Length: 135
Image 1 (cartoon, rainbow, N blue to C red):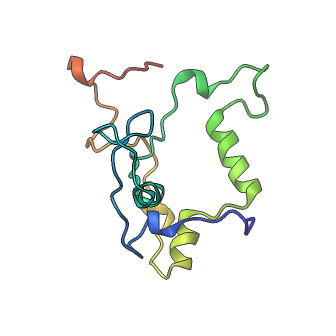
Image 2: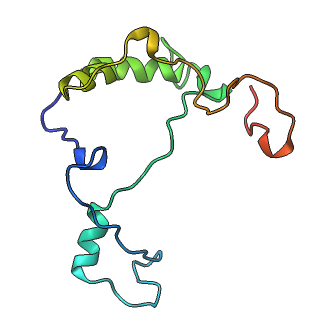
């Protein structure tokens, strides 16, 4: 991996304390309309930004890209995995080992939809739970 591509480990593990930052509107102003202090601006740049769980599912249009967009392979997920391999990105298991943690065995890694449901493929007809994208 290119050594110039750094990762801020403080965003993933507790190695330092991070300020929560302040809310700013679209114009970069505080809720009262004032300008943030230089310290508040700096805190906002360093604040921890939590992310949603990675969704491993692809909507149908991304599963088979048109030939004018991509081919060989035409599946976006496959293209992403190949790109990561070509860049030399380490696996999660390799990162865990480098950190001195016990890496999961291949058989312990769950492959499937990112969900907390016991059966992610079970039919759920509740209107508020219908999937927005149907394949």
